[in-house]
Length: 243
Image (cartoon, rainbow, N blue to C red; front, side, top):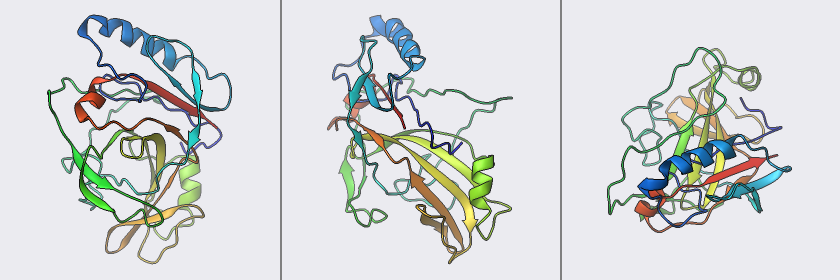
């Protein structure tokens, strides 16, 4: 975890738009789309950079890399009950496996016609404070890891004031309002109030005496914004980046 030498993630689920196909998937070709997604998830990128693929093409198309937005997306259960809290304030579900997870995929079982979603929007330089609230179709879709204590996270946590309970956490995010897919990294329970985060990491206080730290991948994959929540959950796409 926190390996910056190679950043790769798949936005390729039956509910998640990666901004490459504007037409909803038809029930008759779900198996073909599933096979395509599996094939592309194992297809290496031709070089370093940002790429997208659109069904049924099996060719990676290079796109311009983007700079991810800097607002935090904290984990539910960490004391933060803002509209941007992961887990919808009802708790996260995690998969327990005996070894390491090399890939993960998420989906909605069904999509209700006419669905809508509202959330916050942010603008630099102070991306911790929303510039808009209850904005239509402002939301993120994510695949997240469980908390972990890897070699990299332990090294980063070692400079915090509560390093004995500090853990790493990682989320793979599609932000519809920003039109991007990117990775956000976290150091949870990094320190108490007043503790400075590591260089290029930013504080996010989940309670009055706890400092968590977060940072984003240096680059993201640009994905066209959609003004339809129903269209987003009905589309299928795939994006990947390597640095």
